[in-house]
Image (cartoon, rainbow, N blue to C red; front, side):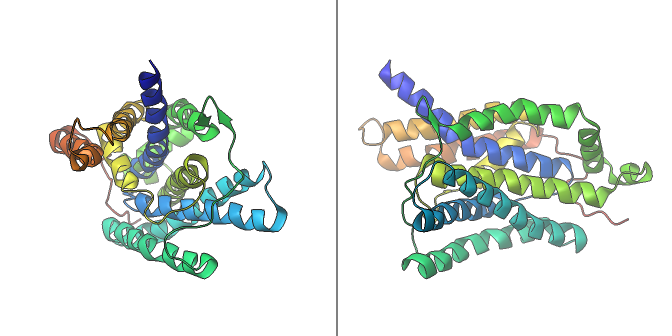
Amino acid sequence: MELALALLLSTLRQTTPLLLTALGGMFAERSGVVNIALEGILLFGALAAAVTVERLEALLGPSPWLPWAGVWAGMVTGGLTAFIHAVASIRYRADQIVSGIALNLLALGVPSLVLSALYGNATSSKEVQSRLPQFFDLSILVYLAFLLVPFTWWALFKTPWGLRLRAVGEHPLAADTLGVNVYRMRYGAVVLSGVFAGLAGAYLSIGFLNQFVRGMSAGMGFIALAAMIFGQWHPVGILFSTLLFGFASALAIQLQGTEVFPAVLVQALPYGITILVLAGFMGKSRPPGAVGRPYEK
């Protein structure tokens, strides 16, 4: 019983950053823009959240409201980073994959520079004492992530904004003809995807751990993209697909230190499931009709 409960709680913790990031990626791709930079945005958000809380603690001392400042810092940083991708992809019609990879590469080097300047090392920030509220051993951001699923479903399928977003992702010329501002919708969707990924990063650094560690995302941004595809760009489908990947990660954690499977196979379990899912499902998925294609008025 205790093992099952521990596995359940670990699954929910591991699912949270994947769910938030995949929901953000869904908005971007529903508008017609591929945001492969989610991995880098997640890292930038995690860095901003941890550094903000640590710096404020150094000035003001620990306080229960400081983590919320870190959450906002992560979300704002994620949105601003995504805006760079939006400008390159929408305004200058750059290759969306290349633009995303460039941001991911920046996320490999910039955190090391920031950490070296602030803390004298290139691997981690100082630990923070102020933590987000916990309920039943779960961060409040875990509950928020799951509550966002019905909200994003309602926003996407039950509001005029969602209808316009889906229209510019399927047939931007027709949407433009009907008076929808394709560029504005795409900018908003990409920035929103960055806000979600930045929130996921804040969860990692100050909700799950209590510091930023270089490379702490460990490919979660890419797994979230796989979960988004597996979930058919639908909030409910994304929920179940991220739960699958979260369960795989939680199971790998529970199996570590046992002699059931070799340690290498246990660590590779979430990534192996990602590859199998993509290999078996990619051909059956139907992405938005105009995804990845720049629009020229």
